[in-house]
Image 1 (tube, rainbow, N blue to C red):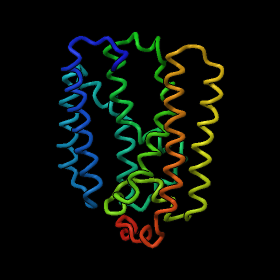
Image 2 (image 1 turned 30 degrees about the horizontal axis):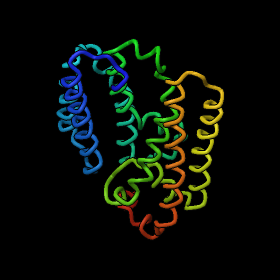
Image 3 (image 1 turned 180 degrees about the horizontal axis):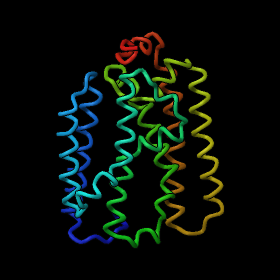
Image 4 (image 1 turned 90 degrees about the vertical axis):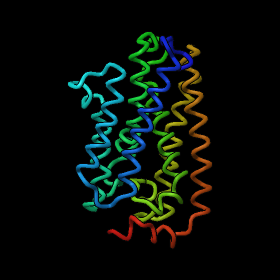
Length: 230
């Protein structure tokens, strides 16, 4: 947003915040209720679509714009059929978990298409992976009490502490090593900015991973509310 040239930026930001609140409403419903009612889901989606229309997104296009959120919702609903998020690779799962962030960003790029010349949308991919991994790790204790599709929690339940550490640490360090290589070779300051941000979140997430793995007791993991349904 700071790099964008958008008319009436305050109004635009208010709409972005409203859209995020609408998406959080959907997310909260899915993580707080095991038995999901289709009528309530439709009401949550209607709020999202109504806010999207205020950005000028047509009724014909709104499902297309929200397709990735719908894909992630299927993963959350699949928990009710005992299908774990660990069936998916880290890349696949965390790509779709960042669906709401990508939707918000897509609206910003739509409002100022010239942003693509500064930072290509694809350059955010690794940053999105890491922020969502960070979110799962950070929310571990909180998600023991809700029906959240937390892949990190499921990995601990199914694979234990050591394998989870190995998988997540390897994923984080792989991205960080690539970012540092790109930083060394990149000359464009805008590209360097996003690469630095990605490197910083990688470092923070690696530290958070180790902290959580040291603090969590496997007895608590096994007592997670989601595990009681399986």
